[in-house]
Amino acid sequence: MHNLALALHRRGAHVTGSDDEIFEPAKGRLAAAGLLPAQEGWDASRITPDLSAVIVGMHARPDNPELLRAQELGLKIYSFPEYIYEASRDKQRIVIGGSHGKTSITACILHVLRFHGRKFDYAVGAQLAGFDLMVQLTEDAPIIIIEGDEYLSSPVDRRPKFHLYQHHIGVISGISWDHINVFPTEEIYREQFRIFADMTPKAGVLIYDRDDEQTQLIAVPTNPDVTYIGYGPHEHVIRDGRTFLLNKKDEEVPVQVFGEHNLRNISAAKEVCKQLGIKGKDFFRAVATFPGAARRLELVRQGATSVVYKDFAHAPSKLKATATALKKQFPQRRLVACLELHTFSSLNPAFLPQYAHCFDAPDVAVVYFNPHVLEHKRLPPLAAATVAEAFQRPDIKVITDSAELAAFLRSQNWANANLLLMSSGTFDGLDLAALATEITG
Image 1: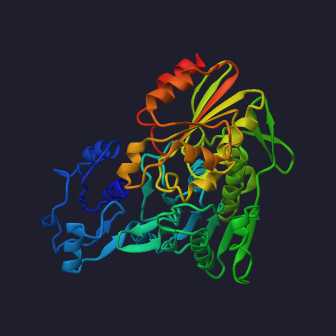
Image 2 (image 1 turned 180 degrees about the vertical axis):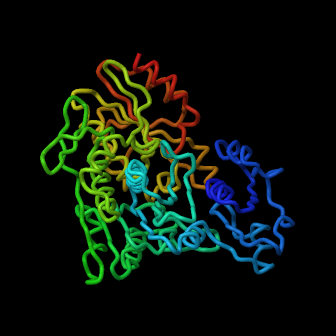
């Protein structure tokens, strides 16, 4: 939301905003632009009849006093995706959806387009190298690349975000049940992607992972007016811990990312770029310099015989893909991997069985969660034994204290061994930089 505010400010709009909590980096960035509210909290008097529109994010609740005042005055109220669509009505809209990989695919497309000097707008869910904002809206860009989240649009609009963008080119990178608090069954969750697929218009394109079982159920070619394009992992070789793509001439193109899931992401990005007029040789030239998306298999520190990576992975499919990728990239090294259960779904006993055998790849597997997070999310207490049983790995270690976690990791033998830390949180403030220095040193 703060990125949208900055993008609109940069475009010349008069922007004001409210929030009950504002953290860095949003706080500093808003302050630098002169957009930081004078005080935190909600105040209905800020909502006046002269406002052109009110854009509401998911953090607000239906009884938010400012939202209620906007409704009372009959002001135009947009959710985030509604406004992005409104601002891009006259552009070609490319929407990247899927339970996993959508940020990386979006980031790769943006990198390639920028490498070749193409004009484009975008809305992406993570800070990307070389881009100062996560949202860009201009008058002259003919296309917009949107990361299409399946989560709800706003507290008063229960539709998934990616249903509102009305894509011309759509991507489904894979479907793996998530957001159990909103989609209580796997079938209801999958249905949201079927709706997205069916929204592909005449002469539109739907690009999908041809090997994903759940995607196959909803992305089968059924509309003769739509072009369906399936993709798999890009052809490649791995040599001395580095991955090389193979082009049509079997020439090797070195890339900075690795893992089968990332090779699938590259294939998806390549298909999108092809639709946008980027030739294969030009794609390879650009993708060789693609650093990957932030917090997606991100290198923290590398030593002579060990390396430390962090990753945003938390859902079962992401966990399995990331851990397997690092093990395959360094097959001769021992892998110690730690997952933090931090999201609503991952801490829900009804969802935990989805993690069965998803953490088999590491040599040492650790699961961490903070019982206080359960209280904050108003979830029932979770026993360590319940967590261990869900993963179906007898030797898995479950830790609920961050100091104990740090001590356990420091006690490992890091000669010829790698560490992978996976979470959408911070392991309760674990000093990852210091830990990585000790391990790789």
